[in-house]
Image (cartoon, rainbow, N blue to C red; front, side):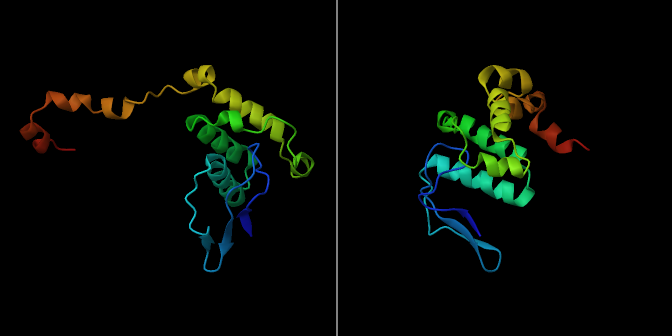
Length: 142
């Protein structure tokens, strides 16, 4: 089974794959030592693996759009009629609806409303430790 074929149209991006990735024996994946320099192909691969593993088209689309947004390649996401749309509809996947929903979700205004997490939250969570001496920190009991 191939996750991605070289020079084939990508599912979520308006581009062609620069990679050939397939499953081989012993539950391994082969990719011919790729460097994954084409970001749409890399993000597409992650989406395809999630889709194959979970069979959840909506979640796979969410991850693809999230990665595209954070990698600043969302402008390369497919906006035209999806070439396999009829096949996806037969499988119960509404490509256009999923893309529109997740594109809105990850837009700058929606993300600000939906996610109350800031880049420095993880570090700032531990600022209270600055109030203690090193000795006090070692003596703390849980």
